[in-house]
Amino acid sequence: MDEALLNDIINRLLEVRGRPGKQVQLSESEIRQLCTASRDIFLQQPNLLELEAPIKICGLLCDLLWSDPSKEVQGWGMNDRGVSYTFGADKVSEFLQKHDLDLICRAHQVVEDGYEFFANRQLVTIFSAPNYCGEFDNAGAMMSVDETLMCSFQILKPADKKAKLNSTTTTKPGNSPAGVKRFINKIIVLIAKFCFASCFVFYS
Picture: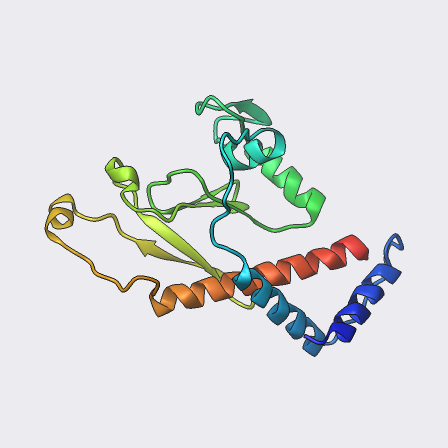
């Protein structure tokens, strides 16, 4: 993306900062260029972060990783994990309304069918590892979001334990299936769109 164009867009966004109700008009071409540039930046980042141990996870990061929805709780409750909290459907609704969002997508919790809705479909938990740790019979799932923000799920069925012992799978190192690459590309674009939409919220 042309640096002069990028600076022009940033300046236009900054001009309306602190002026509620003021909007920034961007062309479809400018938005597409921003999304493409964002995608390129995301793809250049390492998949894994190298962190030195010990790492103390606390505060907001801890709650983002370990808090769980609970049908038995209204407000906040204690978590069986021994860390963070559980939250009820009322807290989901409150958060979405406050931040003008429609859906919370979360992970980091085993769910039997690979995905599970909560709070009248206002929150979805996605867990992509079938037969987690070889101890669970859970399915895995991947969520795709199209251009109209319609969500769909691909289910990864749990392996039959007998078949698992007799089957072998070979893949070339460094190569991933085309479907996975397309899925990752879609997610990167959606993240870029979300980040860009956040600029509108922040600066408008």
